[in-house]
Image (cartoon, rainbow, N blue to C red; front, side, top):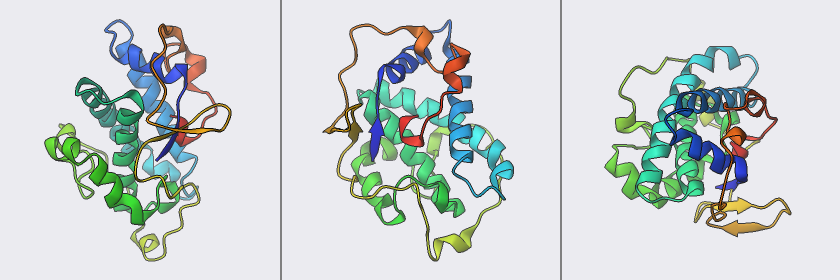
Length: 203
């Protein structure tokens, strides 16, 4: 998968690991991800998916933190959460929201198989053990799986995590963590960052 990565991502990571601001960072990240992906949804179905996406992203914050604790890089941990979301979109037939083509789902799973198997995550069960509470239901569009259209998906990046730098160059593995980051740059901590205009790969 191709991601973007900047100081704000590291600030959000730090905020999630800091008790004083953890809850506002979590709320900001969930709200941001829901807004971004609703913007990619079929407008006729967007509203009915909102509660489901809020719950989905609430749990993927936990998987992000678990991956970091297990030694995955910031980019890898964030990619894990995006893969989980794409499994969920696939299961619901929400192909227009997907970031990776349907035929690359298994390849992305295989790259993080150790983590996914540890936490009971499969393509059919994207949250695995992280879903320790209810997830709001939302109507599926299974007919879209017969001839998937995913205008926001980019293929050819299933073998590693790719990070696109500001100058457009692709690097494998992600950036090194900055020596210092400001918590005020984290999503949700400064309310203006929670409403930034971003694409899903930047979230």
